Length: 208
Image (cartoon, rainbow, N blue to C red; front, side, top):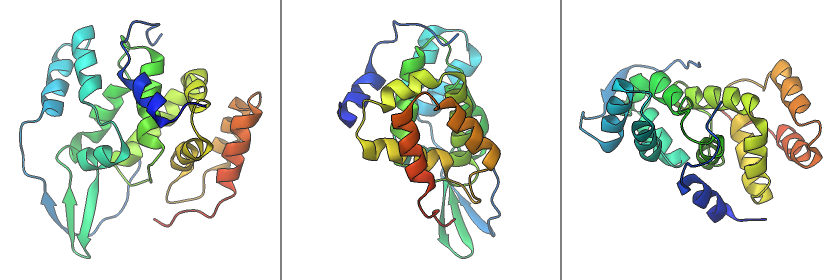
C-alpha cells in the first residue's frame, strides 16, 4: 500500500485525465470575526466565480483550496474561545458557496478532486456549518463517483481509511440508518472497504 505521501502526489498531479462528467449548530453569543484580508484563496475564488468555465481559473482555485482538515477549519470553521466568545474564520459565511464550488470543478479529473477531499477528510472531525458543508458535499460527490474515491482509499494505510470514514459518518447525531444502508450498498462489492467502514461505525461516537 502506498503511504499518505502517495495521496499528496495524486493531489498535485497534473489534471490531464478524464474530466468530471447543512448543517447547523446553536452557538452562543458574542462573536469576533476574523480580520478581513486579501488572500490567494479569496482572489482565486473571485476569479473563478467571474469565469467558472475557465479551466485555468478552476485549476487556480483547486490549488488554493485547503489541503488538509486544519486548513479547512481555519478557512471555514470557528473556534469557541470561551463560553460567550466565538471566533469565526474569514470565509465562514461563504462556506456553502465556496466549498460547493470546489466539488464543481469539472475541468479537473475526478481523481484529483477525490484525492484532495480525502486528504482533508481523513483527519477531520465534524463541526457545524463550514466543516459540515464540506462533509455534505463530500458525501454527494462520493455517491456520484465512488470508484474514484475507493481506488485512492485502497492505496492508503488502514488508519487513514478509517479516518476518512470516521469523518464521513461523524456528526451531532448517530449516522442515519438510511445513509448507512445506502453507503453499505455502494460498498457491497468492496469487502475490504466495507470492513473498515463497519469497524468505524462500531466505535463510540465522538462528542459534539
